[in-house]
Image (cartoon, rainbow, N blue to C red; front, side, top):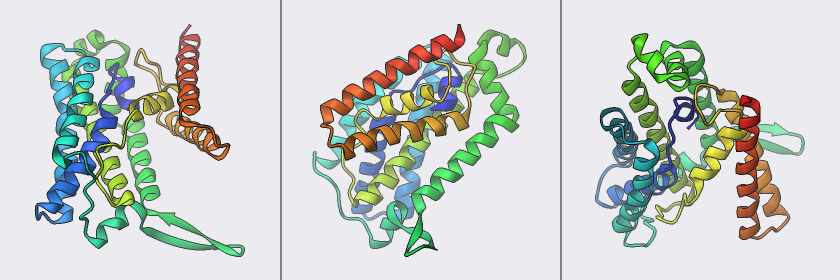
Length: 265
């Protein structure tokens, strides 16, 4: 999402993409597909939906806000259609490793510190995205497109290609999150991921990325993710009800946008 917003776009479909990817994985496994091929299909579909939003923006000048809003409802409906409204739970035993597998155990005092597979995935995605955005021509092109698309075009950058690429990457990563969540829950549920797009965008903005595009840092988003996670977990530990959590998230999003505007001014 950091790349998408830096490029001057937005993707509201990631929450529904998470749900649909988990449901699609479960549906294909129940249909007899090997787990690995079902996961690849889910990731490919996620990338395709993101690319579709990019193509609509690049070829037909349809704002990504509109296309991703349509996908938000469409993918959610498709997830319910696949599952009939009920979670799919017929996963093979080894599939659980993706969501809750232990990669490393380290003694720590009287207990031990465990390194879970999803944490390894987070670290790999963060490092890959950080290197991509800071040390490649593509990363510089993303900043250029978000800063001034016309100037980027005149410099020979494929503006449409950059937009398609960042949205496809985001779609694939949303699908990856859906697969990991389905593995952790041992079910593909159409109910998961609701409202996640707002939390994700809030984390990106809290991390210092400009909603206007052209400015932002991947490491800042990591800080934003940790900040949002601490706030949400803190409210749960304090037994704050779901409605109170939603209000707090809304306030955080508003403050993040205001802070972004103040920094720009």
